[in-house]
Image 1 (cartoon, rainbow, N blue to C red):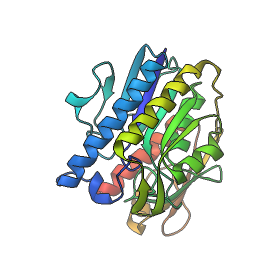
Image 2 (image 1 turned 90 degrees about the vertical axis):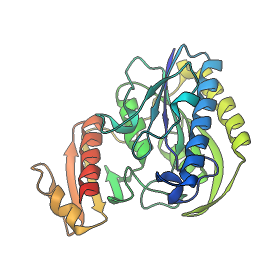
Image 3 (image 1 turned 120 degrees about the vertical axis):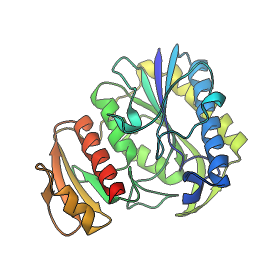
Length: 272
């Protein structure tokens, strides 16, 4: 049984402020170690639950955050960017399930460090009218190719989004949001124990897991960008419709196509 794990940083226990996700400072070095250890907890849980192979995707920012030499030696590591499927790169239709570790609430919603794909670029993304977070896109792609979301960890606001959009998945709440940059968190050790136990149970039951797909293609995507200049650049693409100074829209035939366009828009914004 093959299991795929995608790991972000904002939903990791003990992570609360943007500095912890930005290279070049001591706080980031601490946070990336916490990220690596929560990934290891999920890997242990997956193998305890019956996995024969585990692929882990480093999915925060530059996508080169986890400390490779500290990662559980049994897992494969996907890292670096850009890559075709962004945070879900490495997933294949023969995987039995997806685990999301360290995820966070959607842009425009309440939660610790809430954003969708790029806090620099996007104020809000809606797909088929639904406010869209990273699970909507990436676990949505998994569901579209027949792979269920088994479990997701993060703060209570992330867990509320998972309950609404992926009710069949287990929710692993490692902290409670007190604000955009504050939380009441489990200790790192307690969070790892919880993640390991919940992932193990989710993987044991992967064969009967429900495949939830919150947004069915075709996907009508509406994006409110953070700055007018980002919309100016996006409107140069032939399939983008300009709605207002900062709002654009487009239609995608699949989650994969949507992910590619959104990732390209994020890279474009970072260049501007």
